[in-house]
Length: 540
Image 1 (cartoon, rainbow, N blue to C red):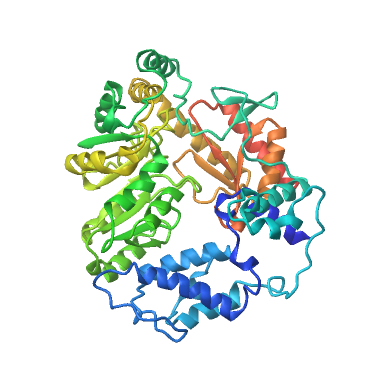
Image 2: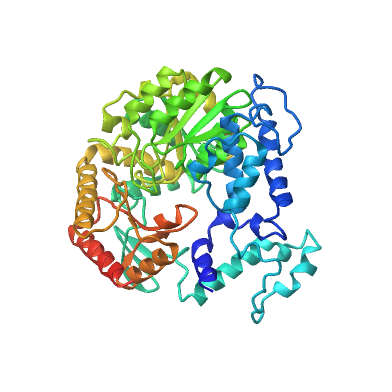
């Protein structure tokens, strides 16, 4: 029963786990079933090989991966997909010296299953009143019947598991009102540490005034793609002002930050190219890489030395190679050593793609992002992606960089061409937000002071904040998903809204409650929050 409750807490509501897990299939622990999964995934990456790789051969357990044309790059892509199918992670040491298909099959057989998984006839739980489990087999015979989707039933079971564990669903909490850093939830005022509104611009009077004026002038929606009727003078001006603020040659505003990442990698990189991304990169980057026909592989978090070694071995086999990193990582609140990554990029003639969703407005003395923080010329990079949905208090994404490349991407990227443009009030809010940052530089300073204060108080209270430093993203690592949900629930009862982050978004032992600091938080609110976390953790 303990395992059931832990599972409910760990995976309830995480969208990456809504597919039916491979380990739940009948006889999934058998060598035949494991071999089937392994051969499916290895055959998939075989088809994605570089034109310079050997011709694919039929895979057998004894097949050598190298001779089958499965290089390290695409092998790790197969490993990532196998991890998703079995809902767990390979340890680095398991993958060392793996040479044949049989090595991978044996590794899964040895490490992916426990005695519960191997039970030939697991005893099903008693059906709950009103539950549709008994009808699943009958319903599943009709693929057009949405009630038959096992994903839907799995979600319902997980939600029920939360309730049975005495835990309140921490997600989709509805704000009834938001003012500065306080919100009303279920009729009660709470201090919110869940907002990306780092500089307090979403409710700034000048920003809201600009948004309202844009509605009066253009309406609430752009009502078309920018290419075919949805463009307006506010968006054109925002492109120009973003490029100036970021100190790049050109910028173009996209309708959505997630869509920008998810679209650009598939659009710009294909067969014969290679995408290397940080293992903690945002889901949108991994989604975009996964959709591309390019080779792809992750590298250890912020490890430019490993990246250098990978490129030394792999660069000659590919046409274009892009390195994808983030300015600030939104789970851990740390950041890359940008000059080191730029040195690796130059050494190996690669492109550098930096997602600045959480570094724009938060890093550097003027809040211009990670280049401002390191005093680096943005021209040394290639693609600077970001959002106007966080520090700028609006909604949308952007790409910035060299004139010719950004112009090309602004005419051809699917997420730009085929999506309704960023709405007039959002564009106007972001445009005014840029101006407010320059008129009121104290906002960036106060944000950085508040972040430093939270970290200091957390350290004084022996709270584990991981690798967070110099950013407003601060996790308090509590060690399990169940405990993270419990801590978040207890904090809400004390008037503090901070969200739990659960496995598999992070490792189970690294489950956490995450805090986003803003320039609007007061010293009193920060002191109270840290004190409350320490008190709750001491009692659970």
